[in-house]
Each structure stands twice: as C-alpha cells, then as structure tokens.
Image (cartoon, rainbow, N blue to C red; front, side, top):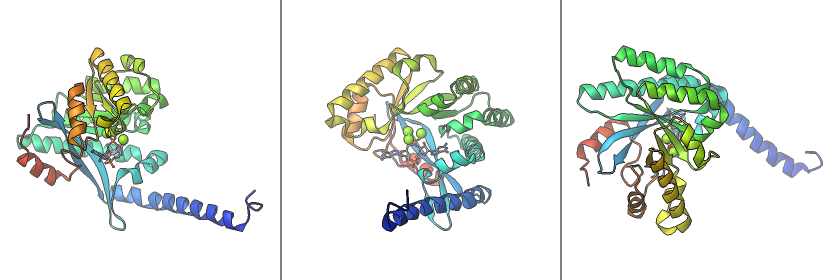
Amino acid sequence: TAKENGRGQFSVFSTEMNQRVFEYLWLDTNLRKALELSQLVIHYQPKLDVDGTVSSVEALVRWLSPERGLLRPDRFISYAEESGLIVPLGRWVMLTVLEQILEWRKRGIFLRVAVNVSARQLIDQSIYTDLKLALDEAGLESCPIDIELTESCLMENESQALVLMGEFQQLGASVHLDDFGTGYSSLSQLARVPIDAIKLDQSFIRNVDEKAVSQSLVRAIVAVARALDLQVIAEGIETEEEEAFALACGVDVRQGYLYAKPMPVDELEHWLAHYLVKA
Ligand code: C2E
Ligand code: MG
Ligand code: MG
Ligand code: MG
C-alpha cells in the first residue's frame, strides 16, 4: 500500500497525480471557454501532388491561450475526446474550414482541405448532418473536404464508422486513413473499408533512406494500396532523402516540413503565392 511504500515515494506519486488532476481541471474550465471566446485557430499545411502542385491542405487546430500561448493539439485533443468536447470542437473545425474554402473560391483559389476526425465524433451522427446542411446552404454539390480518420476509429465503433464513411463519400468527401501502420488494422482490412487513400505514418518515413526494413514496408504498403486502387500519402517528410525515397516508391501525395509547416491562413496564402512548382 502507499503507506508501506514510505513517505518519499508516496509524495512523488501524489505530486504526479496532482499535476494530472490540475491539468484536467484547467482544461475542463478553459477549453470550453476557448471555444466560446474564439481562441481556437486553424493552421493549414500544404500537400504536394507528384508534379509538385498543391491542390490540398490539411487543417490542424491550435489553441491561442492568453495564459499559456500557442498550444498544439496533443495538449488538448485527448482531453476533448474524453470529455466529449471534441464534438462541438470538431463541428467548429469543419464549419470553419468550409467557410474558408468558400472564401477562397470567391478569390479563385481552389483547394481541398483535409480535416482530422476522432473516433468519438463518429458516434455522434451530427458530424454528418451538420456537414450536409452546410453544403446545401453553400450550394456546393460536391464536398471539397478530405476526412482523415485513424485506424482506431475503425476499431472503436466499426459498423457505425463504416456507414458514416460511405455517407461522407456520397457527399463527395474523400476518406483517408491517417497514421496508417501504427494501429492494428491488417492490410486485408483495407479491402473492405470505404476509403480513398492511406496516409502513411511519419515513423515509416523518418530516415527511411537509411533503414532497409522501413523501405521494404513502405514498398509493400504502396503495392497493396495500388492493387486496391487507393492513393498513398506520405506525411512527415523532412529531408531530400526521404522525399526521394517516397517518390521512387510511387507515393502520390507528400507533406512535411521539407515543404512547409502548418501555417495561419494569411501565411499560407503568402506561401502559395510565392511557391514555384518544382516538377
Ligand atoms: P496528424 O493528423 O497525424 O497530423 C500530423 C502532425 O504532424 C501535425 O501535428 C503536423 O504539424 C505534424 N507534422 C507535419 N509535417 C511534419 C514533419 O515533417 N515533421 C514532423 N516532425 N511533424 C510534422 P499537430 O498539428 O501537432 O497535430 C497533432 C495531431 O492532432 C494530428 O495528427 C491529429 O491527429 C490531431 N488533430 C489536429 N487537428 C485536429 C482536429 O481539428 N480534430 C481532431 N480530432 N484531431 C486533430
Ligand atoms: Mg491528419
Ligand atoms: Mg498523421
Ligand atoms: Mg498523427
């Protein structure tokens, strides 16, 4: 028991617990407020087609906390998932992205945007109905959004997830399997889920040029994707060597710090205006 473990150990344990409880309570009071007070912002990271064209970007949420500065999603998304706040947060992301797409179109910028969606959001049908309503209101016939789901989304509520994925596709959205290779889904599972692309996890790409095992894995995954007519996206490309390998393997779309980090919308527009396609 804690008592028998001695004073020292007990107090270390309780300090850690206190910190976790404190963090939870801080998020509990502040994340809901952040949503109401418009402290969340979306940064956009470009994705490059084989020829270097940028036809889509990924939306990655950030929190501009007056108290703590710019917070990345790993600091608050899992709390949002646990508390259920991910549902209104995800709705805000989706609708903000759609508004941004429409605003760009008025100015002749045609970009698709990838939106990350958590398992918890799929349990709540509203993600689909909200999107459909917003598309109808905007008069858009086909949805210019790519939905990025992780393998755990499929595990956690498979039958409902599969139905929703099909419905998203009927709206014209594409469904991408994010962080592919880190979960427990098998390659054979890919054949029976309604997806359009897999997004290879960064861990496969990291130093791939120096790692024979990663090279074989990436080649095998690309071959399976080809056979199933799925696109392959490589994320987290940081070096020329990683890029060269991805291209040699036949990766269709690439993304990473080598090209651009996620940026606020004005920076993205500036980046796009100065970006020269390197074919
Ligand atoms: P993800 O969807 O797998 O996004 C990739 C993450 O890798 C992003 O981190 C991105 O900034 C980072 N990244 C991109 N290129 C590179 C690179 O070349 N090198 C390295 N080291 N990292 C790179 P970020 O923005 O912190 O997002 C983390 C995760 O949070 C995302 O992983 C996604 O799962 C989740 N997330 C972000 N926005 C949302 C959202 O609106 N809704 C939900 N449900 N989840 C979100
Ligand atoms: Mg993603
Ligand atoms: Mg990913
Ligand atoms: Mg990830």
